[in-house]
Length: 233
Image (tube, rainbow, N blue to C red; front, side):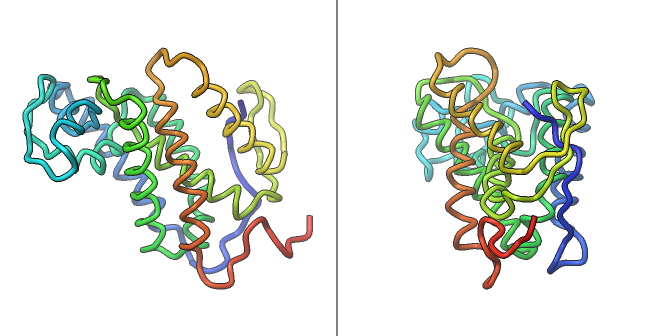
């Protein structure tokens, strides 16, 4: 696995990645709220819980689940869950990927479409997780599904771009985005095929990847090429 540090990919259409920075700031603010010592049942109220989601239905009334402190409509948890995180490393990993790769996806779409893209990827990721684990009563939180959508869009747009990464967490390397992100995507596919153990919601990652790969095709600006067509490396 590679830890991304920086890509060599300047912005072409926007002066600054306002939405990406805003999303990172919002995630950090919500996490700071989480660690103030609030009841974890409050966090669980905003999480996607598959069996509660399907019991209520996407258009059902709000219900107070056994782990909840607040009655949040289950359909709204598909939006809210992606702004909460389980621990600092969970937050930092997601925000690092978003910082390195989100700006160029935002550049390819424009601010508003990129925001819609990000939220749609996160919502589809939550639905995919719930569909594949319908009996689960474990709360799902985190931006991983939405960030997976950003990763899929980036590799569809800029596979040839060179990215600085840390291999084995300590060795700096400059490799193509296709190699760096392809390795991450392959890991998700392999892990989802194994027995589902541990806290990682691999199906949410797959859902985000699928949504991102499909949505970038229709949501990118007119004239923005896929797969770095025309780029000399």
